[in-house]
Image (cartoon, rainbow, N blue to C red; front, side, top):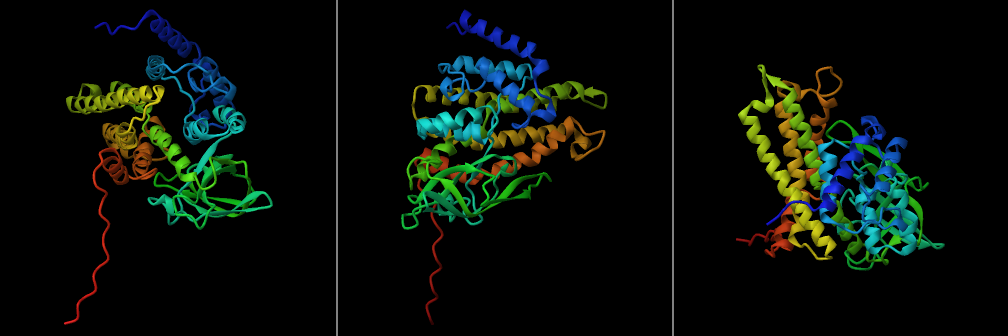
Amino acid sequence: MDLKLSKEYEDFRQEVRDFCEKSKDQMPGPREIGASDPKRQAWQKLLIEHGYTARTIPKEYGGYGAEPDVLKSRIISEAFTETKTLGGLSNQGISMFVPTLLELGTEEQKKRWIKPTLEGTHVWCQGYSEPNSGSDLASLQTKAHVEDGMFVINGQKIWTSGAHESDMMFCLVRTEPDAPKHKGISYLFFETDNPGIDRRLLPNMTGAASFNEVFFTDAKVPMDQIVGERGDGWNVCNATLKHERGMLGDPNAAGTRLKTIIDMMHEETLDGQRLIDNPVYRDRLVQLQAEATAMQYHGLRLLTASIKKENPGLSRLIVKLQGCELNHQIASFAVDLLGELGVLYGQTPLVRNNGTWQFSYMYDLGLIIGGGTAQIQKNIISEHGLGMPREPKVGQPKPAIPA
């Protein structure tokens, strides 16, 4: 069996590598990677223009418009990882809302909202969890009624990542109060500077404040800013969640992290010996590389299923669990490699990589909880993927029988 790439793909690989080498001076620096930074937006547009991000999104919606091709997608990701080239934006708008609109949105919605989202001029956040509705999301209580041709929203969301920096929010609200809890939800989207919306920062365990609690007080939203039909938001929500799990289990991100660790292992020493020459550390590295490689090939399996318009079933359900746990293991390995330097946090001349690994260790631990805890993911895999019986609910204690 000949596994060599054809001339078409070899030429494409060289094209991508040439771009990576020639465009280094246009790539944003570490402080310019936020979606709202002008240099980051210019880089994003350059990547779209060459088809290195938003590759298969139709041109009429702001993408590159290429036909799906598993090998070319892999070639791009490999070249960007190996050359440490910054890839396209990946956030809640691009990775979750855009594919939801492509699948379920109206033509007008696609033409109006996808292009500015891809280019980074519209940054989105997700309004799902509430103080009493996290794991049981369908029990949400934020409500909306219709008044003068507008949805009027009242309620509260919590743990809303990035709401303080977002221009837009896609949000689940209860619009049909008399319907069963899974049937009365609608999927709305709106500007976050709405006068009826109050965003308040919440610190997370890294010490940074990236979460928010969001309060709605008679927030008015046009009735055409709904994806799907009224009361059908649960189905739309599940379409978004499958893309969220894919975003949290990005194999290219894991590969890039391992590449950075390998470079560090060649540079850092312990008792005069390079870390890469330590057999214990090498063994841990190889184990993580094997996990990352498995995740990369699994990603190709999912991409193939998507191209063929097949339901990947169980294959999709493991992505979030695998990705979040692997990313935390990678960060943990980096902290261990640094020894006493790995416990440093904050501004100190001895901290490595600007404290990235210490931050990632805590942040990635949070992602094992956020977006559906590891325990919930395992239940989903067992019940929906493997067809195992549902976890039994704890019954009410029986009253004592009088003597």
